[in-house]
Image (tube, rainbow, N blue to C red; front, side, top):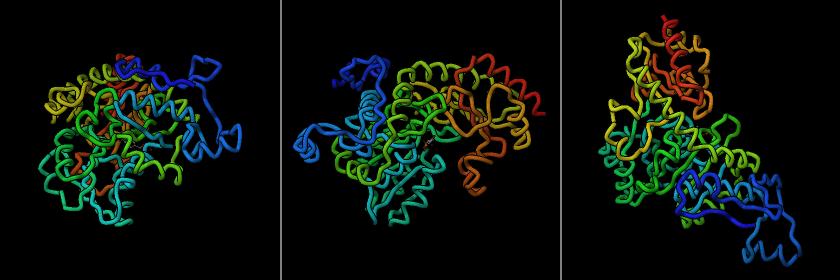
Length: 397
Ligand SMILES: *Cc1c(COP(=O)(O)O)cnc(C)c1O
């Protein structure tokens, strides 16, 4: 088997070809190796493979050819030395955090986090003696103030869920370096095409591949990318022995998703920009937060670190929860769902779904109001989306 790929290729080329392991049959499309294990030609071969003296696969909890293709293609896209694919985005986040730390260590994280990420930092990590401080990550001074002698990890997502705050990744990375800590960036909302955390100085990047990478609402998956040394020393044994591995079927689905990622993200971003402009001009809409607009609260940072405006929009209906529910219920094209990055446009009311477990105070801190809605723009025609939104706003009273 041979692996395809050149570092000089542009992203779209990487996403079609990189990492392909072609078998002796010369298949065009990547093969799905739906196998748990591998047979050896001889007892000597088995011994050599277990000793690491001969390359090859041993067991699919450790590695699998289809999963390997997905990891190599993600490395090519991200410019990372190595990667480990996981069964879900949360398996990636949890491994990236727990494998970096031990009892007595301290994390500083932005408080605007995907709900389960916040639970891992705030509730799970402390059970094992890892302390956490959550800060308003948009103010760089807050990160600096939170540093302690035992701070070993910084964690953030940008843009954040659901209010699309943008955090200065290069500035946080610099502080992490000064503190002798590592910065983990959850890059789901920006996608690997619109933001390159490793180039900005982050040490580890994580994805929920469930979102734009699959992009068609089918499989769960995740991936952790970093330098080879960190993965060898921190993730290698953890993956072998605890088993958060991605299934070959899901890896195959993600691989095929990667081929069309640039086309989908470009189209969805173009439509999102149009929808955001429509919302911002509408009298029933309060705030419209879209990283691609000049009136975004951190527009200067967006310009520095993102190459696209994202496929997500956050906006408030002035008339609050009742209007937000009436609006959602009147939509015909856009569906109500807490997922994102899908070909189908999806809308969610964070206060009653994804962020319902937070206290009123914590929600207010994050800027989540009763009238706040998060829209993930899909691949439908933007004219139809705007017509759907226009009609639903009229129905919302
Ligand atoms: C969805 C999501 C996750 C979790 O991913 P799963 O694949 O659902 O486990 C983590 N972080 C962010 C920002 C997400 O959007």
